[in-house]
Length: 457
Image 1 (cartoon, rainbow, N blue to C red):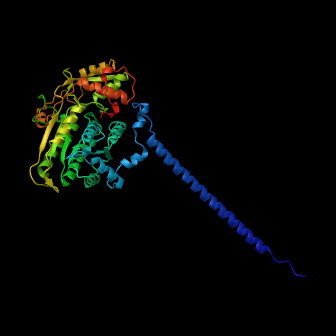
Image 2: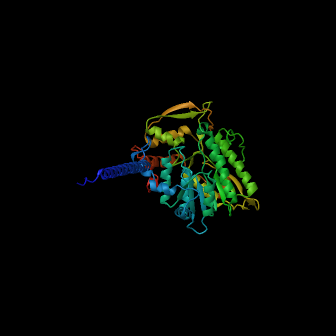
Image 3: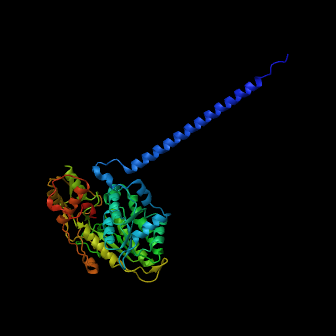
């Protein structure tokens, strides 16, 4: 009788194959789980980033509607530019900088998202000039306000490239794309007191950044004419009033003033060596709608409305501090007048071909007003009494008195300030309460004009 077949090997083989199938299934399942986990994590991170950028937490001094002033994630990706750019980026740059009027200017405005820069950009665009902005949107004061100005300019087809003056490759790229006729250089680290906290920021922006811009401009063909913001702070410890462009400016009282004075000397150098046409404008305490939150009139308004005390300074010998407050519309007229009368640069390819224009002007209001009077005007407009804390002026770089002589600017391009402080502050307060959504007893007579306050820049 035949013996039964030996099936032990077959059984073992089936068991082994079954083990391999289970092992493979386990590996596939583990791999799928890991892939699913990673995909879920990636999606979650993207969503968090998206909602963080589009719906940031509201700061204490911004109303509930302020998130509307933020640009969305897609626009951030589009507006943030590097020197590499791209086809869409270059198209936007060219479109913004192309003039729409005959013989119009093509102006690069640095600091375009700033106070003076946004107003000048809008004024230039409205009259048909080409305008391209450049701004780094730093956090010296709340960037939300700068983004709101950017949004306003965008509605008027002014594109702002997000970048820094010290990015030479970006500047060269801009000049490769656009043959600018003019530069309105308003980007700077502002503020007198902040220099005691962050002195390097003043050197980086006001000196290194300015030199970098001039280096690119000198090599451009054609070279642009340059109008740039100096400051009344350069008069420093000078006591001869009103301040004239011929007065001494070798005694700065702050690092900010020193960097602006350095800028004037640097401008002279580049004019002399490379034939750049350069016009410096010494601003005197500019104020108005869309202003800077670090300025006294701005934070006085905020603190008075919130019932907080305000510091009103007196000199060491008990005299009132006075400022030549200059309304923004008057300053804009001065900036445009300087641009319109700027002669062409005479250099080419970094080499001077002949003498070039070099100018410095005061842009002030010619009527100094005690800070105590400014407070009284605000009290009347806000229908609220200020809690004044009168103290001696500290030695922080501030000067007690400024007074501009603008005879030269009037003679050369018709500069004539026309807005008194009470009128200018009415316009500012109307903008302030509308922008921040504040319900207040502001006097009805403080209306700016018939257009919506957000359109006034």
